[in-house]
Length: 247
Image 1 (spheres, rainbow, N blue to C red):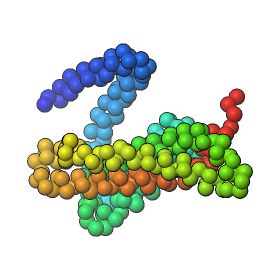
Image 2: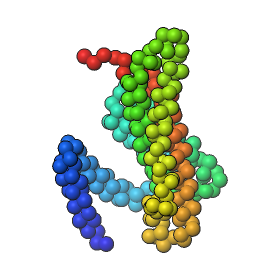
Image 3: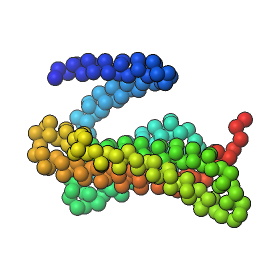
């Protein structure tokens, strides 16, 4: 494929914008801006990876992952825009990511090389970002719909943590739905992306599939663990947001 032939795929974005406009979704402009943003970010990433993939120091690679976690936290804040969300998002993403990566490095399932660690870490961080924002959005909705019930439980002597437990549980279930569906469909409905990339690069099919299994299991754990951390650190703030009357 020629370097600039990928531009032809932009027809799919144009069709998406037309379809969104026709269905009254009112987000055609957002699709347009996001498409330009992702193209710019990925092209810049391509040039940046030429440098990053030459890194040989594990601490330097970890610093790269920390930076990626911070950028992900900024994206979470951009979407949620509540006080302290930047910090709680960063901590949730970072702890979940390193809790999964370090055991994989110690067991040699994941090699401490830039070619493996940085792409793998980026995949895990992006997955965790999606999970925590989905969980927090659902938690806000649950708390809002159960506000009177929660306040009644607190009035009867329950702690806020106990009163929001059901909302907490439903939010975590929601954050897991995409991961569970992905695992159910993998191998039957579609070949997951990383395996496709390895196969296209000429890797042994069994090796590609086994590595993809590791990735799927890691994504489930980090998505759930990151969401648990996020909600534990922010449930009081979420309830305060819902309870505060709008001016």
